[in-house]
Length: 380
Image: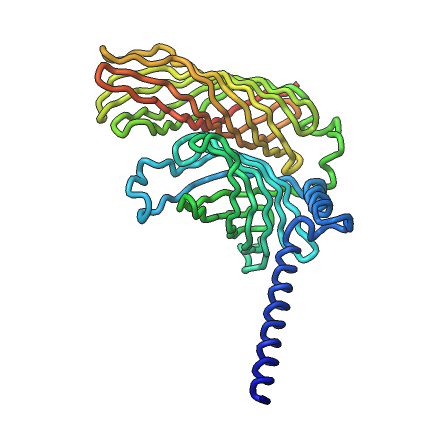
């Protein structure tokens, strides 16, 4: 009887300890959510909303740059046909809480594995610790999670929840992050560049600022990389491009940008040229700009473009649709040489589709142009 009582007592203690541990674990997890930095006591949803507002209003601006996706050989025997250069852009608000851990509220868009437009928005929490230093710069490691939502054209643009792990390494203001996406079996990498501007963000620009002018006319050139992802045997050459544009600032951060871009390309089938064209784009985007220093600005943009195949020449038997409309993603930086003279570098990702036909076959010609531009602008 005594032994039985001791067994019951031990079981009760273990159960109590397990419940206590589970409760403690859940409490710690809850503290990593937005409600964990709120002082609200009107309910969990109210505290969550208050925490998100705190990150958004008190956090620093960041430029997000999607960079690369690995399609592992063990699940992608056709990985060479998948798009690894998932370039794009986005913005976030980065907030360090009282424990020194990072919280992010972010939105970005990029070219997915099939060269299609994909948006992604979410919240992230990352524990943070110092690893060492790179010269005078401290080096940090970060680990945590993100709770995001994405949408894809191959899933009828339905919202898809995406709770994912996050690992990062970098300096105080520049972090390189990676995540594993289990339902796609891919590894996705991006950079987050943070600017310490929370205290000055809402202030108007001083008239003496090199960015005080609201209008910019610019011109320049660059390189347009194409990525044919419609038919294995069909490729489109990458080549140089030139661009002209006009940017109008509505306020300190928001601008409307219009640009004209043109480039020339050859179309090949089994490495044999069977056509050529000039790709012309008329692109309109909304952009968010923020100061990285007195003379530097970073920005991300999202909008649309009208694309046209000019001077199209195809071998007999081929016909191709000559115009298309697509999303456009931008990310870049501007350096003010003076109050009137600016240099900008950026990349621009688009997704035009041109249906092509032959008497024996047809395919969707998808140049998916990624244009890397360097421009000189006059501000007034």
